[in-house]
Length: 370
Image 1: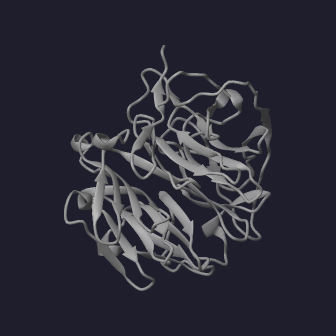
Image 2: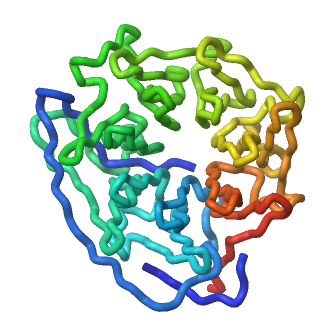
């Protein structure tokens, strides 16, 4: 791991080695592990460090707060950063990560941290980072190479109430039962009358009733109720991204360049600002302790991404927009993390990370000096 001591504080095209096999009774792909021991040093950094010349399109694309209170942030090229409340610690391929391009993070029930990258999955147990390659048998298998058409993006990960780990990718949804992964839709017990593929999954969640929800690029909003997988196409749309269940059990969904809509258990309703928000892509959604809904957005029009988008807060009646003029690190926001103190962290393009404490933004990104 890289650690630095600085005197000043301050998407995703990631893709994954994956595979398909059948759930329950068909061919399975056995998991083999290669362990890499992380080094330890004594110094820390006060910032996420961006190397000079970092691609402006690279982002802090995902994050979480673990059971111990540490914050984890995945970046598009700088590996993973862990923040302990004082210092950031940087983990890269030198420490065992399968890649420095990270697009999903998960903490499982035993405290392991999982990282999805463009070169496979890595798992951190607090001491070592373990790369998880997959041996090939006669089951279908996605070969990792530089061909964009054969790569497989792990854009989201989820562990359900029963302990099963779900991985949403560009080539379907996979399940891990503690020993091996299987292709979810190959399970003969899953009723799939609409012939869904669940490709290009962007976000996943398990709701209070145990349903698993997926947002996709081409099949709309999908739901698995434990027996059947079905899909919804609100407004006839098929491309969705951000996903949240609020404290009242409503499901919020981020639309492509049209803001957001809300599912109350019966119908989808467009929640409109009647302004700029309604023409933004909603990439991430979170709810704060006051019940406000926060939206990370990006302008659909690439020529306006330096002047439109940012973060939006909705209090049930009014939308409030926060931008770089307020201290946000970039107009394109891809991840939102709430910490235990009530702060909200936003990951943005250009490897930006900032924290909002309810009054002001603090930037936690800095460029290297060389």
